[in-house]
Length: 499
Image (cartoon, rainbow, N blue to C red; front, side, top):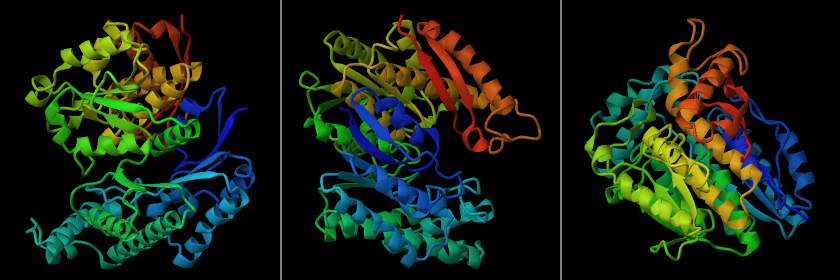
């Protein structure tokens, strides 16, 4: 009999809607998700979500729930809504109802702290963020530093004068409501209605409005004596994979030990792009959040996690290869691969968090894997978006291999990671963007399917033949589309036949 787990995703993008199904759905596990969600800035129907949860949770073993989807209809709607507290407080009560209808249900929840990007764009933010986005971020940094007694480059008064007061009031009032609901969710965890709670820091930084919110929520966690029950760390789009890994570990009564191997010891102290914590601290949170334990010995480890992060100054994947010493000298790639091959020979579970760059895999690492015919001999690989997104995915892949024999689904997901993370994110996204006609741009390619999707598929096929040559005969690109009709992400369906 399959273990049934209900999933309410963060939104409808492939990383949240498809990845969990592709990795964890197999002979032993059934992941159930809503058939329909929203569309970017259009929120999902709360009534549809409630109907789904009531029906599917009755006979389920576990529920992984995005509170942003439950309360606001998705991640982007959480930044745009005008809901009153009273409405949101009614919505959150559905969790109590579900708990009462299935006393044995394990409920894991996560709720993102609203981000504050340091650039002006309304692609994922309110319309006025196109005009005042950078200035709102600048004001948040100034306010935060002022509260800490730190001199800011721009005084608070000067920064405030750059933003339209009505726009600022809208932004601040929404942050206050979202933070209020963060605390309400905390209280549900304190009261035992939620078994585990993760508060991810989406695109975080050391100073600013998001950091202020994090501090206030941490204080509440401390006030409720929940430091050992609520985890707050950088991430967002990988959290479903992390909590599903945790759920499956708990249901199996297992707690795998994870050994972390850095290509540079100095990488432990870097703060990756789009994050506000040191890498070493973030890694420990991710391992713990996935229901695993960190160990200092690879001999005793169940999973060996390799990380390719630089010794400092993380760069964007589309700018690689970096010529900085932090990449070329301080990373010991030779030692990494020597241990990786040894662990494979010792039948250890090996997974690679390729976080050398932000927003794409390290093509040099993929080249070595390909040349040594190791692409499909490792149990996991990820190298997409932020370091935290990559970490959570790689750890989840390791957990899936630990709990199950290598499945066809797992192999397809692994092959897809190379095609998407290295192929699309590091190479094809930039290449196709540069060839877009004048009627299109990075944030608007007109339609999910069509000319751009065909261009992407053609260039991905070329990438596979050149850079994934050791497996290209076994990998088939079945489908390509552009979610949210933009270039940032791609929706792939990859087939893999093990010859």
